Image (tube, rainbow, N blue to C red; front, side, top):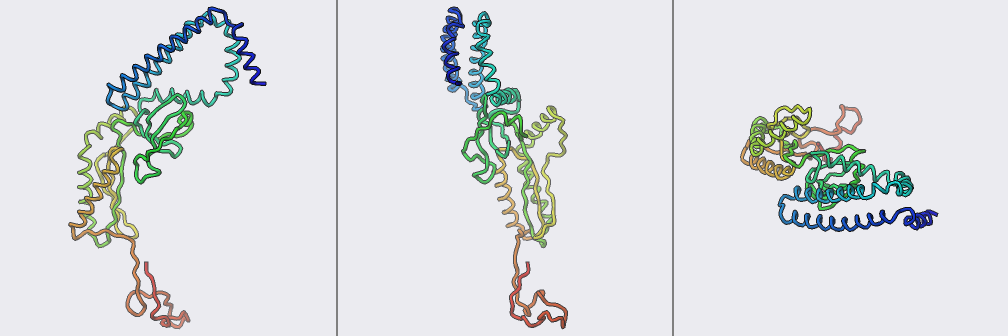
Length: 326
């Protein structure tokens, strides 16, 4: 029934449209082909002359959008005089499209939101619905991201692409870090033995953190000041700090410092290597780790399972039995 309705509508179009409307339609199609050719040439020129990847991608997309907008406006100017004749056709088609394309319309609204958001674009790292990735393309209906993490250890690219409907970016919470000068806090933990000189460990770890921080201190300060101008953001000290915690197996030192988003893993590697060299060079420092000590009753060490004298627990009757002390 639906297919016969569409066939009848197509057969009736020549009767509903005048000869001048058909001529305008033909002329519009010819202009559309010319515009498509010009857009293709412009994109080819951009690909060969613009080196920055993100800027090249944005310019190419904008050229395409400009061509499409021009054709829409041209079509309105061509057919504005024939709207009375097209009213029936537009009404019939539009009624069905409004119901069938609700999700498409919502995704298009999401596209408008993304293109109007100055900090969401190619190169921005986002997290939505558990998916973490970098935006590489924003389409009218979906956004394509390069997956980060999941298959690989650390926050690095897995090589897989994922498509996210733009409607999800309106319905769900989106975590993002801008592509230009984005900094995040990183925390690295090191566990020292209780016998270690923890004050010396704090001093050495702070020096390592300052060495990392000095490389991008000025740029990080400018980035946070810019965020303070755009948002109601109040930030405190940006310099590295070391926190001390008494853990089960030793004294835990936590280095908290700012690092560029895309340099987290390399920075963690440098800090880890520096801390290993420090512990190796300092006799007063030693790493701690969970250990087990085994002993035999009667050979020293605490007793296990030994109750009060005469209690009937078998005290003193189990010499030679192995025991474990965590």
